[in-house]
Image (cartoon, rainbow, N blue to C red; front, side, top):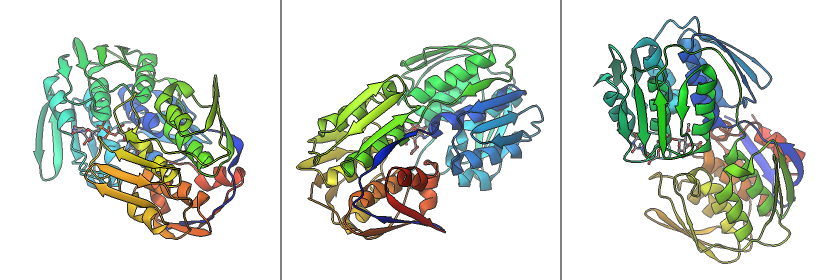
Length: 417
Ligand code: EPZ
């Protein structure tokens, strides 16, 4: 298990290109099983979650090769419709393969994904939607068995704009008989990237990014090439690191149009933000000030995935902020660790009251989930003294080479295997 050693106090000052989006590439890689052809995915980030997804693809009989940030996936050799428990437990978001496998094979058998560090992560909305497409689903011995004579388009209303459920419906319905509509669909930009990928394959999907998506089933889909969109959460995390150290950072190969809530909050906290086509710059040469309330919401609201990095920034801002985590029920695991560094945070249910202190002090801390681990990095960069962060494997799930990019910008950070 590797750890990160950080000596705080250096300003983040530099420029680099942002990685491709984890939450776009995972469903897009799942979608490659649909076309039984050769696919080329550009700007594919080097993440452990991507490696886990590649393992699932290879377990299904697909062949995958990586050349830098280019991934070649040939799904013509697919010879299985099962994802074993070991792989599902390795990465619960492999549930996104369900819709794609069923669309290709008319059957699927996957181990129940179970919960993770941030919550129970139920899939009731996924299963209810797939049933309305004519798919028979039975659950036994920890496995979900799906079978369908044929998949028939349907009008589906999601009780909650679930990202994964929206994606599973799009994947299952794109070769269905007839038309499927998704009402109250998730509006995240990653949904639009998936829609663009599927349409390039020959699907007929419209409305992505809005709350109604229309999918007209087609007979055949073809192998394609696609470039993954930039990661808006990773972009926002690095901007927070720059703000926390009163630094200056330029991000290229990014897309500010996906980041309204994030950039607005940074400027409300006193940072200067510059945005143009595919570049974002931040400058922050004084202590940030607290924003009274920060509530996580479905897109385009403030993203839950960046709640914890912003909490690290709030912990050293001038004033008090109240965070409300509306999406996941257990997404404050970083609070104990920030408290060890001197943060003054009180949790009450879904609320966390953060009373800004002048500074934090380095400590030995433990990452307990992906984004909470990133929050500890941001806090450590700003803290006085040295911090050791254990369980870096959580951070590696979503941040490519985090120590490399931060060291490029002046951070004193090294990884100890
Ligand atoms: C995706 O998870 C992302 N993961 C998450 O990012 C992100 O936090 C989340 O969307 C919200 O934006 C990937 O894209 C791989 P949801 P997903 O279904 O699809 C409840 C990260 O750090 N729900 O929109 O699982 C659920 O419990 C990860 O990169 C049901 O109740 O999120 C949660 O409270 C973390 N029943 C809420 O909806 C269901 O059937 C949002 O879940 C499905 C979801």
